[in-house]
Image: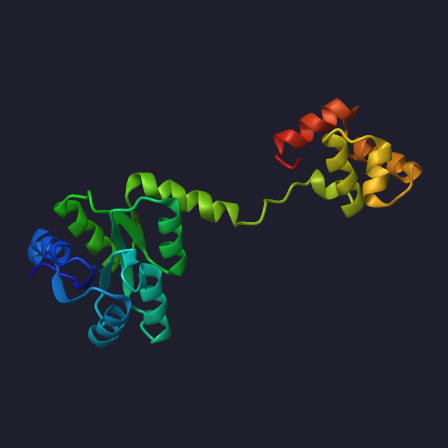
Amino acid sequence: MTYAPTVVLVDDHDIVRAGVTAELGDRVQVLGEAGDVGGAVALILDRRPEVVLLDVHLPSGTGADVIRGVRAGGGTDVRFLALSVSDSPDDVIAVIRAGARGYVTKSISGEDLGDAVLRVAEGDAVFSPRLAGFVIDAFSASLPAPADPELDLLSPREQEVMRLLARGYAYKEIARRLTISIKTVETHASNVLRKLQVSNRHELTSWATKRRIV
């Protein structure tokens, strides 16, 4: 017998839920349907499906609210796959941050949706091709910057001076901004150029720009 994961459908439109059920056919076992946040959370915690197919906009809240409600109720083993007409980056990131394992749009074919549900049930993450980029960009931006051995040669104060020099500030302006003397700025500037092995401000600006730190 072919494996068919258990599923709960969460969408506020009856016709959408009926259409999804028809498209998925016997590839899944539908345990129930819900059309709002409260009803969805209660149903999911009661039925404990392997996968929840979840719209991101509901009359009483969002798909992210459903995920948080289920997690708070102890449903840590339930996997969520967002299914929405929206391809907004904000919607995608919000539901993924809440804990969804994937996000596909309602333009997906029935066959591909069935494959997506199966993959999520097995622990994979699934995204419509264009939406994957939103997730990569968002989570890459939240990661700490990789170590830069050259930048690490500079003290915290030298890094401050370096950034201002690379942006074109004069010594007098840097001194005023950092509340230090012009002589101290000159000393830091000299150390920066020596440690980074650059000859002048133009080369320093080029060095900093390549690293996107100005």
